[in-house]
Image 1: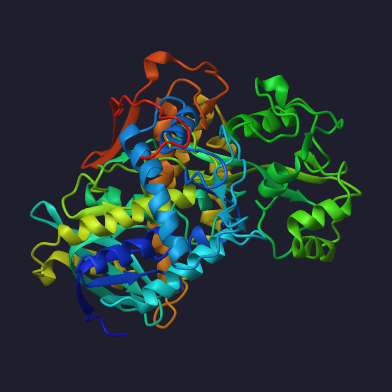
Image 2: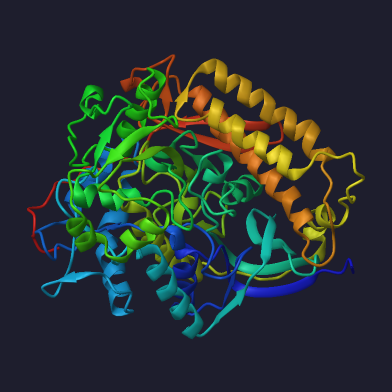
Amino acid sequence: MTDEPIHLETDVLVVGAGGAGMYAAIAAARNGASVLLLDKSLIGRGGATIMAQMTVAVAVGEQTPDHWTHHLADTLNAGRGLCDEELAAILCREGPDRIREMDEWRVGWTREDGHMKQVMAPGHEIPRCVFVDFLNTGPAVAKTLRTKVARADGITKVSNLSVTDLVVEDGRVRGAVALDLNGGRAVTIAAGAVVLAAGGLTRLYQRNSASVNMGGESYALALRAGADLIDMEFVQFFPIGHLAPRLVGMDPIMWDPFRYKLGGRLLNGNKEEFIEKYGASDSGTYTAPRDVTSYAIFKEVEAGRASPNGGAYLSFAHLDEATLREAFGPVIDRLANNGIDLTQRPIEVAPIAHYHMGGIRVSAEMATTVPGLYAAGEAVGGANGANRLSGNAITEALVFGERAGRFAAHAVSDKSWNANWARDAISDIHTLAPDDGNSPSFGALFGELQSLMWEKVGLLRTGDKLEQALSRIREMQAQDLPRMRPRSKGPFALGVQEWFDLRAALATAETIALAALNRTESRGAHQREDLPDTEEAQTHNQCVRLTESGLTLESVPGRRTKFERVALGAAE
């Protein structure tokens, strides 16, 4: 393997090719920029969007009169007082444009009587969520965007390329250093602007709905480049992730649309409904927000009222097979192949790490605190506050992706490159010694981190647990990471990549634990068993940044706006 890096140049570098990254690339290209779209897996086939099976929240008002300000009101209510209201308003106001544009691109939104069909989802006051039928929303969105990217002029696509560091000189981002996973060589990329769209962090948890490349890379790259992170303590747990019986080849979070379409009943181990005991009116209608439902299931388990495998029951026994087939057609056959007959017995569900509300702090233009660096999708923090409203994830990916690409294209500056700028980052790739047989393995260390995050920094937290987690994370950074050695170099340099994955995961995990320890209250997805009350005095956001002495925290006032809800169905 040669140590001479490959060099590339572009106007806009987009890191991550999920929904947000692909939309950012499309937007940057149609605003005149040359674009390099890269991903550590295959373009448009990794990340969260392609795995999303359910709905997209948007106030298009095609079946039920609606207005974006009502969508905003529901978003702010779900966010428990911590939403960046400017970002949330952008999400809700521009959502209809993005959904209609996707419709023009033939994504295939399900229709009824000629209109986009809209259904109810948790936390919404009216049915406003669009979808592609038979649990196909995310795959359809990803396929549509892949097609647009393939046909667009000015977009160069590179798969199996993993960014290890951003290059910052003279106060702005100049490009990046990456690892070619096919050949093991370092790659330098000069760019006039960079968009980070490499997704979230839920792979850090033992039970998760994430793809393998959702390990916090976006946040670690931004942090090392000098950007601020915000709201890192807020990790959303999807309340009804599949637990039992065994399910093969299907998404563990697939039960959401079943419940809100068909009124599935959540029952504890005694076959009793329980949500209303925790301050939420639900009774099978599935209107309780995700944070409340997850908390309720955890508390029932803690009280000894769990289902046999440690969760809750989800029952559809009140429905006949004809009703199930009318709603979900071929999915019922796939369930039958897994030995599941919903008319005969309930399945077991439990909370699962699903989404991260926090992330990179950005302006309305999706610009970070580092000039030339932008962010999009789940990499962005702030819009969702302490809890994300159901259906807002793909909306956020499309809206913020478009804005990040457009504003990055307008901000392209000098693309000059000095090889010395990347020397240290390239050295990190080339100087990792091979495994000597005595170094800790990636699998063991990453597995330990996942268990640690699940047990100590999960849904129900305490100060003692968080301090223990923080201590062990820092010990792993100081002692275990330096001792870890790649299993292999050269072609398919996955061993080298694992070292960078662990570095990013530990850096991101530290920000979550630190922010959670410092938030001495319970709010939204952050629940402190030792501090169960929500404190009005803590209606502020926390920013994390990396300094020479380590991580620092700063409490910042949230961006709050005054808005009035317009009458449902009113024109803009």
